Each structure stands twice: as C-alpha cells, then as structure tokens.
Image 1: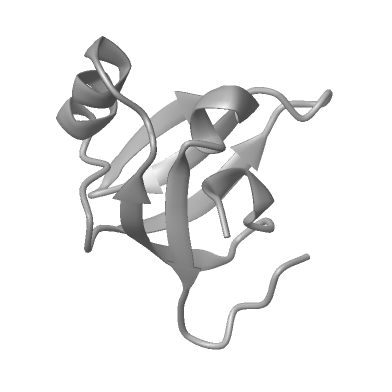
Image 2: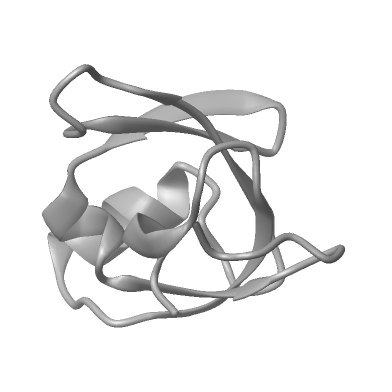
Length: 80
C-alpha cells in the first residue's frame, strides 16, 4: 500500500521509496526512511496536500508524492 491510501489517524511503517533524484533526497531529509513510523495527522479540505506526523515533525505531501512512499499498516490500523 502507498502512503496516500493511509486513512486518518492510522499508523504505518515506511517500507520503500519509489522515487529517484532530488525528490527522493527531499523525502529522506524529511525523515521518510525505511522503518520510520508515519501517521496521517491532517487532510486539507480538498484532500491534497495531507499532513503526516514523521519523527515528531509534521510534513505536508501532495498525493503524487505520497504515492511514491510504500508503507505497511501497523497496530491493527485498517485502510479506510
């Protein structure tokens, strides 16, 4: 599953980044590394961008960026 499919308040662990170049470096600099826990925190009224809680920081990603981050759902959280 990808990060853009994660429902509100669900938790997941980053598995892989399917993106190359400067955008990959930017996501990694923001803390999106394999093994990192991520949680959906806020969604804009139109659904794009979405704010994610990553390593005690809040980052906003557009749907196209979040689609490049593969995650595994954690702690019984279910896809909504």
